[in-house]
Image 1 (cartoon, helix red, strand yellow):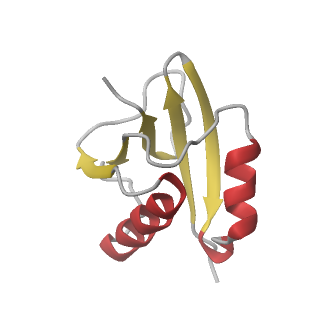
Image 2 (image 1 turned 135 degrees about the vertical axis):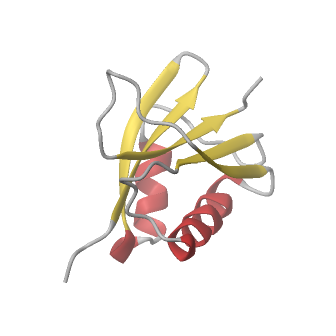
Length: 105
């Protein structure tokens, strides 16, 4: 059985970090891991979750809804998400599947 994971880049102002979520372990421990990283996720801050919808994306629509719901439980009610037709930048991993932008301008 193939384990699905979601690699995404968390961006806040000039800080960023690449994180990977394992679909089989979306739990309170994952929330603690996210919160304990160098970028602080604060509840009810405006956030935008962008899924990269290129042809190589292994996410299905159900995965996207589940991930958006999970991340919304971390950041609060102000999460907006969308699917973008883009590819990772040159300095980012090819298997990057999305971006979480905190407090976008």
